[in-house]
Image (cartoon, rainbow, N blue to C red):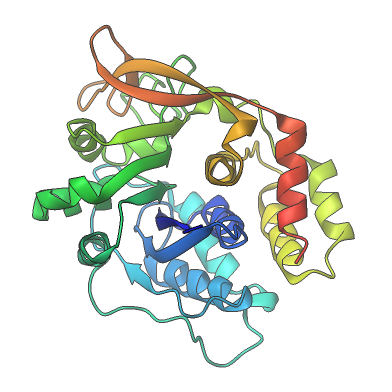
Amino acid sequence: MSKQLVLMDHDGGVDDYLATMLLLTMDHIELLGVVVTPADCYIQPAVSATRKIIDLMGFSHIPVAQSTVRGINPFPPLYRRDSFIVDHLPILNQNEIINTPLVAETGQDFMIRVLREASSPVTLMVTGPLTTVAVALDKAPDIEAKIHQIIWMGGALNVSGNVEKSLEAGQDGSAEWNVYWDAVSAARVWQTQIEIIMCPLDLTNNVPVTSELVQKMGKQRHYPVSDLAGQCYALVIPQDYYFWDVLATAYLGHPEFYQLHEWETEIITAGVSQGRTKVVPSGRKIYAMDKVDKVAFYSYILQQWAR
């Protein structure tokens, strides 16, 4: 049976690296490449860490591309600095040379080329803002037909957002960061006919990273992937941290763990609600991950990282 073709687009946060690691463990997936979007990171260490992770997991043939898009509302520097920390973890710096290739073309041009050359429609696994996807669609509208679906960690439908009013003056707290970074590009993707399956804060708020789970990773740290995952989560355990990108990515491994709900929505691109994914009658239809079997999910990621 042929494998599912996937192109990943992440934005360099701690959970983006962990989502990449999870995706690389899925035997039924053929990962065509990884695009790093310069949002929740500093781009050079984020690209470097991504390549080192792919090396560690034995997939050095998978190319990485650096997107050059820009957002409207930058992530806070405190969030972005984690890319430097992950890039310097000892487990990722055991070798002098990085073998995973960094392509010369921009991430948006790489996305266009990969989609055009793919033998069948490709699933986009996006764990950051949708800006690289939007720019690629603007440059090459024909690629829309080559996108099977977009699985996206983003949005907050019927709960508060995570763009804190204390950090972003003039906002009402309804926006989620991956939308808020560039709501105009999210709205551009909303104009397409591509099937979108969101993993919104409505679900991720119920699936926290717990000390108990991190300790379980520590007990299987003789596996390099679990060791790296545990180190990454140790960085963020003092915060209120959730399985944002990992939860979204696990859908590709076991969609039967999830229940989906269809919503009609629009992206708010200006004003105090800029970056809000609003439920509105006759809006753009999307699917949102509504419920998940948490026990099965937690067990699955521990099992997948035991390598």
